[in-house]
Amino acid sequence: MIFGRRAASTVVGLDLGSHSIKIVEMDHSGKSPTLVNYGITELVPNAVQNGKVVERESVIESIGVLFDTCQIVNRQVNVALNGADVIIKTIQTDRMSNEELEKTISWEAEQNVPFPLSEISLDYQVLDPEGDDPRMNVLLVAAKRDLIDEKLVLLEEAGCDVVLMDVDTFALMNALEANYESMAKGCHCIVHFGNESTHLGLVKNSLPILTRNLPVGGKKLVETIQGQLGISEDEAYITLYGPTEIVESEQGGEGESEGEGESEKAPPDITPFLGVLLDDVSIGVNRATAFMESTDESGTIEKIYLSGGCANIPDLDHIFEEKVGIPTEIANPLSTVSYKADIFQGEPVEKVAPTLTLAIGLGLRLP
Image (cartoon, rainbow, N blue to C red):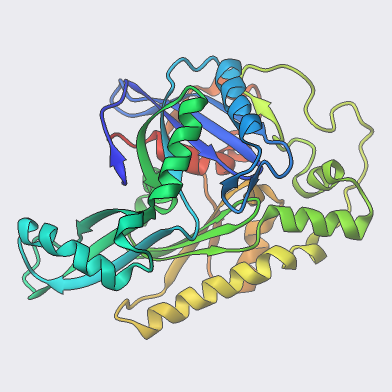
């Protein structure tokens, strides 16, 4: 967590992607958090590129319209940082008190972070505070200040008040750990598909030991399908995800879903095109496995969880499992977390949930 402060009884998680914006509202007033509202809206093409907001006014307008359409009054939001400007690293230091570590952490960061200290915000956590070893493990998180400031100003102009700024790896972990008890022990891999990039996180005993952002995502796959089949971008999205996939939706909104009313016909086989996405991701998983074998991190990856928009591609989990030889499952961040069933308006929860994984992970966080 880069920073945080007290929030209202409901928490809004906002996931600003390069293709769409996802928001969830979690009610924390009961014994356990409950999803009470959500919304997804598509951005105009190229509004966000390489993690940078290009069409600023359009993005600000889209955020405001999404809140209004979903009738979410609480504008206090939790958001995530991602990309190459965020560094997560576990380091070892001599065992020392918190006061001593606070004095030396800047020096440790200089040795491990490839940015000048004047340009970053720094956070850290001792992972084994009760250990007896003369050395201790410290989780170091650093983010470029200009990245933080840019997101804060953008959301402020959209009428939002940022309560907590997290890192995507931790938010994804949070979503999965709230639903899968097995995440607490052993080693697992999180693959979160975005539009421009794919986040890969290796988690062992609830701690991140490796994170990577791979420069391939849904956009590249859509472009490949579009070119190979000679169809439009919208048709490529429908071909990829199917007519019931939420391309643009706000909870409570009306109107036909994509493909409604059209004559049904057998969709083309997209399996030959999936290598554009899965080849690079499988290489990333293989390198993560090699990383574990080359360091003190013993063990093997027990399961891979797929989330994000591309996780809704039919049979993607089975195809990926055959490719890497590791049990693979589509993540469902609402498998045990409570939710109001009527907000999905008949849409299968397991179809929507993978897209909301990051936003739900943020909505579950209390500062």
